[in-house]
Length: 148
Image (tube, rainbow, N blue to C red; front, side, top):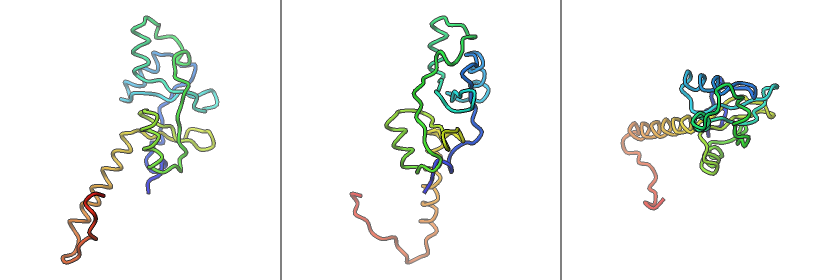
Protein backbone atom coordinates (compact mmCIF):
# COMPACT_ATOMS: atom_id res chain seq x y z
CA UNK A 1 0.00 0.00 0.00
CA UNK A 2 1.34 3.43 -0.93
CA UNK A 3 2.29 5.86 1.77
CA UNK A 4 2.85 9.58 1.45
CA UNK A 5 6.62 9.01 1.52
CA UNK A 6 6.32 6.78 -1.57
CA UNK A 7 4.57 9.48 -3.58
CA UNK A 8 6.01 12.73 -2.31
CA UNK A 9 8.45 15.02 -4.02
CA UNK A 10 11.32 15.65 -1.64
CA UNK A 11 12.64 18.76 -3.37
CA UNK A 12 9.95 21.19 -2.29
CA UNK A 13 9.95 24.70 -3.71
CA UNK A 14 9.06 27.00 -0.82
CA UNK A 15 9.01 30.67 0.09
CA UNK A 16 9.70 32.22 3.45
CA UNK A 17 7.35 34.53 5.30
CA UNK A 18 9.65 37.44 4.34
CA UNK A 19 9.81 36.73 0.59
CA UNK A 20 8.03 39.09 -1.78
CA UNK A 21 5.01 38.37 -3.93
CA UNK A 22 7.25 39.02 -6.93
CA UNK A 23 9.63 36.26 -5.81
CA UNK A 24 6.71 33.85 -5.25
CA UNK A 25 5.38 34.54 -8.75
CA UNK A 26 8.82 33.99 -10.25
CA UNK A 27 9.15 30.62 -8.49
CA UNK A 28 5.70 29.46 -9.58
CA UNK A 29 6.32 30.36 -13.21
CA UNK A 30 9.87 28.98 -13.29
CA UNK A 31 8.89 25.65 -11.67
CA UNK A 32 5.46 25.41 -13.34
CA UNK A 33 3.62 24.98 -10.04
CA UNK A 34 0.38 26.50 -8.78
CA UNK A 35 1.23 27.04 -5.15
CA UNK A 36 4.01 27.31 -2.62
CA UNK A 37 4.38 26.21 0.96
CA UNK A 38 5.36 29.16 3.15
CA UNK A 39 7.93 28.39 5.82
CA UNK A 40 9.08 30.33 8.87
CA UNK A 41 12.70 31.21 9.60
CA UNK A 42 13.26 27.73 11.10
CA UNK A 43 11.90 25.99 7.99
CA UNK A 44 8.58 24.94 9.54
CA UNK A 45 5.53 25.19 7.28
CA UNK A 46 3.19 27.99 8.37
CA UNK A 47 0.93 28.51 5.36
CA UNK A 48 0.41 28.29 1.64
CA UNK A 49 0.19 30.84 -1.14
CA UNK A 50 -1.43 29.88 -4.44
CA UNK A 51 -1.51 31.39 -7.89
CA UNK A 52 -5.14 32.24 -7.24
CA UNK A 53 -4.15 34.27 -4.15
CA UNK A 54 -1.47 36.13 -6.07
CA UNK A 55 -3.65 36.88 -9.09
CA UNK A 56 -6.27 38.41 -6.82
CA UNK A 57 -3.69 40.53 -5.00
CA UNK A 58 -2.14 41.92 -8.14
CA UNK A 59 -5.56 42.72 -9.60
CA UNK A 60 -6.39 44.62 -6.39
CA UNK A 61 -3.36 46.86 -6.91
CA UNK A 62 -0.98 45.50 -4.28
CA UNK A 63 2.69 45.88 -5.01
CA UNK A 64 4.75 42.86 -5.94
CA UNK A 65 7.18 43.89 -3.20
CA UNK A 66 4.62 43.13 -0.48
CA UNK A 67 5.56 40.23 1.78
CA UNK A 68 4.07 36.80 1.12
CA UNK A 69 3.18 36.54 4.83
CA UNK A 70 0.56 39.28 4.43
CA UNK A 71 -1.41 37.26 1.91
CA UNK A 72 -0.74 33.59 2.57
CA UNK A 73 -3.45 31.26 3.80
CA UNK A 74 -2.37 30.25 7.30
CA UNK A 75 -4.64 27.20 7.21
CA UNK A 76 -2.31 24.43 6.14
CA UNK A 77 -3.37 20.80 5.93
CA UNK A 78 -0.48 18.39 6.10
CA UNK A 79 0.04 14.66 6.26
CA UNK A 80 2.60 12.50 7.99
CA UNK A 81 5.04 10.81 5.63
CA UNK A 82 3.76 7.44 6.91
CA UNK A 83 0.09 8.20 6.11
CA UNK A 84 -1.55 5.79 3.66
CA UNK A 85 -2.82 6.70 0.23
CA UNK A 86 -6.35 6.30 1.58
CA UNK A 87 -5.66 9.08 4.10
CA UNK A 88 -4.30 11.22 1.29
CA UNK A 89 -7.41 10.69 -0.83
CA UNK A 90 -9.66 11.49 2.14
CA UNK A 91 -7.72 14.66 2.93
CA UNK A 92 -7.67 15.86 -0.69
CA UNK A 93 -11.42 15.29 -0.98
CA UNK A 94 -12.37 16.72 2.42
CA UNK A 95 -10.17 19.81 2.32
CA UNK A 96 -10.39 20.39 -1.45
CA UNK A 97 -6.69 21.25 -1.72
CA UNK A 98 -4.20 20.60 -4.51
CA UNK A 99 -1.14 19.88 -2.42
CA UNK A 100 -0.33 18.42 0.97
CA UNK A 101 2.95 19.02 2.74
CA UNK A 102 4.43 15.80 4.12
CA UNK A 103 5.75 16.26 7.62
CA UNK A 104 8.09 14.46 9.99
CA UNK A 105 8.09 15.84 13.50
CA UNK A 106 6.57 19.11 12.31
CA UNK A 107 9.29 19.61 9.68
CA UNK A 108 8.63 19.69 5.96
CA UNK A 109 10.12 16.61 4.25
CA UNK A 110 8.14 16.56 1.02
CA UNK A 111 4.97 17.44 -0.81
CA UNK A 112 2.26 15.27 -2.36
CA UNK A 113 0.00 16.67 -5.04
CA UNK A 114 -3.26 15.33 -6.39
CA UNK A 115 -1.37 14.78 -9.63
CA UNK A 116 1.21 12.58 -7.84
CA UNK A 117 -1.55 10.47 -6.34
CA UNK A 118 -3.45 10.12 -9.62
CA UNK A 119 -0.26 9.03 -11.39
CA UNK A 120 0.39 6.33 -8.79
CA UNK A 121 -3.19 5.06 -9.05
CA UNK A 122 -2.93 4.98 -12.85
CA UNK A 123 0.33 3.01 -12.67
CA UNK A 124 -1.13 0.41 -10.30
CA UNK A 125 -4.21 0.00 -12.48
CA UNK A 126 -2.00 -0.53 -15.55
CA UNK A 127 0.07 -3.13 -13.68
CA UNK A 128 -3.08 -5.00 -12.65
CA UNK A 129 -4.40 -5.00 -16.22
CA UNK A 130 -1.04 -6.28 -17.48
CA UNK A 131 -1.08 -9.11 -14.92
CA UNK A 132 -4.58 -10.07 -16.07
CA UNK A 133 -3.42 -10.20 -19.72
CA UNK A 134 -0.42 -12.36 -18.80
CA UNK A 135 -2.42 -14.82 -16.65
CA UNK A 136 -1.68 -18.46 -17.65
CA UNK A 137 -4.33 -20.22 -19.74
CA UNK A 138 -6.97 -22.03 -17.73
CA UNK A 139 -6.50 -19.90 -14.64
CA UNK A 140 -9.40 -17.61 -14.20
CA UNK A 141 -9.69 -14.96 -11.52
CA UNK A 142 -12.25 -15.60 -8.80
CA UNK A 143 -15.74 -14.56 -9.88
CA UNK A 144 -17.06 -11.46 -8.22
CA UNK A 145 -20.51 -10.08 -7.82
CA UNK A 146 -21.05 -7.51 -10.59
CA UNK A 147 -22.36 -5.00 -8.07
CA UNK A 148 -19.02 -4.78 -6.24
